[in-house]
Amino acid sequence: MITIIAAIAENNALGKDNDLIWHLPSDLKRFKKITSGHHILMGRNTFESIGKPLPNRTTIIITRNKDYFKEGCLIAHSLEEAIDLVENDDVAFIIGGAQIYKEAIEKDLVNQLDITRVHQDFEADVFFPTIDLNIWEETSREDFKADEKNKFDYSFLSFQKKS
Image 1 (cartoon, one colour):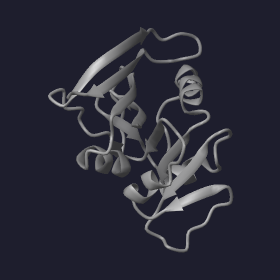
Image 2 (cartoon, rainbow, N blue to C red):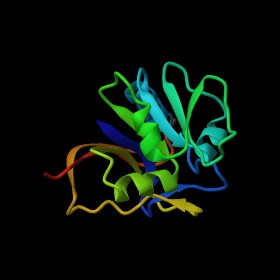
Image 3 (cartoon, one colour):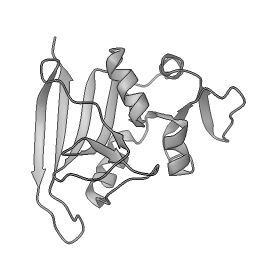
Image 4 (cartoon, one colour):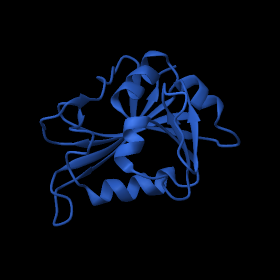
């Protein structure tokens, strides 16, 4: 199964200047818990914004640059090639960026969306594609209010592709 995991604002904002716009420790904790022990697929810009392979995960970087190399990572030159590198894993996660999310959805390569919806609009330069509720069905939702650690109201949402 291929799952997209993303944190997106009400206006579908993902990031600005190759960085996250907000800091939600509970989202980062959930991301770590869900993705640990699995393959994570990402574009080169997303990898470079993180800066290193994440512990206890197999990192697959998608880039058109045939000479690109990062120690401890697998390199793919297309989203399909990245998916082909996933072995012996019941679920792999596409973790960004915007172009990779868009391509995965348009090419129908994804079974599930794990979304953290940050309940505020943000200025951004990259956006998540609109989730088409004719295609996707919300299967779970947990709502949270802002607190001393998490500055914004947010929800954890899961979507499954309708059959």
